[in-house]
Image (cartoon, rainbow, N blue to C red; front, top):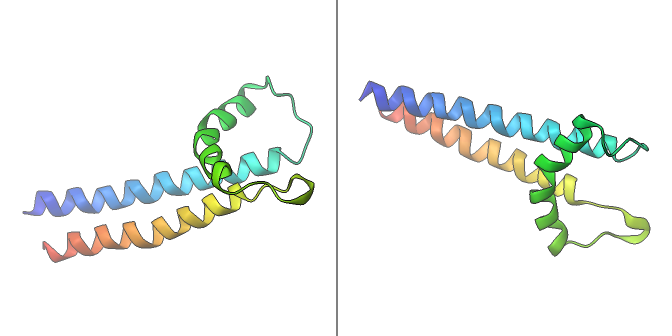
Length: 99
């Protein structure tokens, strides 16, 4: 049973790490959007390729407000924070309950 407990504990750490990294990628993309950057820069292209599938889905349901203000990165960051505060502790408590 300790194998399952350790697996769930490690899974909680990995989920937290992936969600944290993705949140920082979203923040980086939002900051880059404030400046006039070269769209052919490899870093900019990677940021857009990684984030656009999720942000595009959010934009379908929540349009840009007056002046082109896009709230999709903020909504995604709030969703990531919610997932981090729900999934990670749930996995950790599940792992502890097996011990």
